[in-house]
Length: 490
Image 1 (cartoon, rainbow, N blue to C red):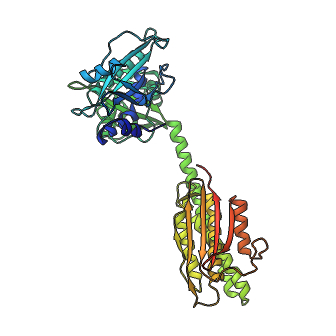
Image 2: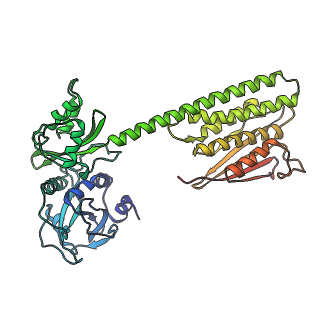
Image 3: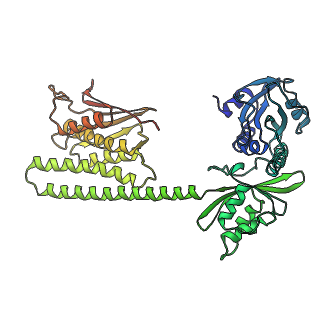
């Protein structure tokens, strides 16, 4: 399915400002669909000037849909849908005509011209289709919805909705069904849906909400012993198109204000209300859990550093060179794991930017090398899960140490190059550790090698990472170790 931007660029001549306005509209037009109990289809002029292309579609959550199949990417010629042509040519909302029975159910069709900004050009037409099969005598709630939808549609036609200059809302806003208040021009409640009233009851309201000044009522509930919050008053009275959260007695309510500006000025406002108490409680639990996990990683890192310090101290006391080197290798292995836990202690999730870890492992190898070798990284690992990062860090430590120790052994006069070449794909990570040192001995066999480091590498790559390990000689001298590691999706 092509994206909205793809469809606009492929079929239309709209500019970037038009596209941005359409994105803003489509990100928030669920509100119009739910208030209207209707399907919405956005049609924009085809670049040839001969017809219309459907670039977006929205179904209502408050009533039955008309279109069970998607109509996005459909192109129709002018004249095929006369109401679209009328709305565009006459720049007005078009409601003419009897219900359409062609689909077997009665459907009322309306069209709304879409204007960019108060004095901007027309950029499209919204087709609003209402399934009348379940029509009945409307309740007070439904009448309020329909009146609000009518005001919102007029704002779309006048270029007043979506609100220009407002930042996009990144979290889910309250929906119509969560709770709705209708306010008059002075900020007093003229209608309160049962869900909205229940939310205010949980905040501690005992009086009737209808007729109350919503700004003052909300402020009094939340700040009874403190000065009134003017920002809260501004939003709750319906004067600013923003979202706020109000809290009292452990209850948290999300409130979104939509000023209704029709014709010459503001006629009132809608306030969408959602009780988010349980959601915020779970978020706090997750934050506490994340903090606990980070603290555990921090303590593990400290304990590993203590173990490494003890091993280093013990190595200094040994006179046996082989024993000292074995302990130094253990220090490096413990250190590579400690680096991963140190990074995880700073991250909010169990995901790590592995390039930083790889660079620190590379630097650690260079520091303990007796040869004049400075390993370098080519390519990036990107973000890796902690379960993958720890074994890869150990593998990288072992391979770099082997390359420096065996490829450029026997004295500090040796020098050369060691590269860590990384290729990251969607579902696979390929790592090559290559050096131009002495190369593998003639009788080398990975299956029968007695090297503890290579045995650790092989176990980690094949058993823990489900990957493949390859070791071979380079054509121009030196050794090349390749890792092919599948990446978990998500």
